[in-house]
Image 1 (cartoon, helix red, strand yellow):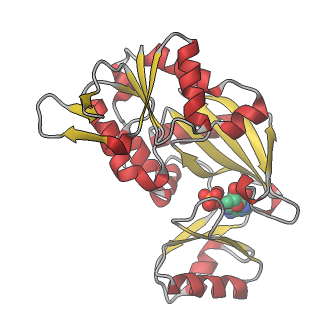
Image 2 (cartoon, protein in one colour):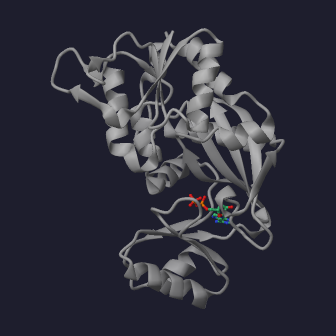
Length: 302
Ligand code: ADP
């Protein structure tokens, strides 16, 4: 097969591993910088041009779209879809997953476990917002944050109030969330491919840190999931319409709760901590499904 990895940089760990895993299985793998592609979107023969040449005869694409490049990246994926090329994740699923609030609303609709969460932009009724979610301690998040930046733990209602006021001054969208204390600074990344959890790791925050982000000094190791965690992760990926997804869970007293669903989950941490050939599983998924057109019909309403 001829498979494109849509990625800005061939040297990135995940990109490199996907290319290697495909080549090991005898496929023609090409890394395409999607920002350098251009398209004639009005043509009745949809095409993507890269380095002056049309990208022809691809069987599948693996989108690895950076969060800040969602708009253009998903347009390129959509163009491949119109050419009949099989994507591991569809453009719609990727766009959907990039909107944290939409994610939580869809997961809630399916009855998937979530931390109690309030959402606000510019409210004067801060007390009402706090009491709707519960009592301090509370976690307050900037909707646009990544890598744990803009995620604050407020130990008292007064502290929560000050943080919400400060964020309000930034003209930002904020989430106010129940603090899952019993998670003990640990979260679980479930790597879902084709409706199965193929690898899972726990990430533990540094001493005294409630955020488990590896960028903040956390460490990762493999973990055995409970059947409920496994099924929650699979349902969350399905709800978002994603075939390949990183589902982040917290272990709460009321069962697993989903924090986030990622459509371009990194391979480095999960492969290193579990020893599983995650890239190979993604290629195998393509091999099994590339001819099944029903797999590339987004069925999520919302
Ligand atoms: P980001 O997307 O910026 O990484 P997250 O929402 O994933 O932000 O939060 C960062 C980390 O903080 C999580 O990995 C988790 O360890 C911790 N965390 C986030 N929300 C909660 C919560 N409601 N209760 C307990 N810990 C949380």
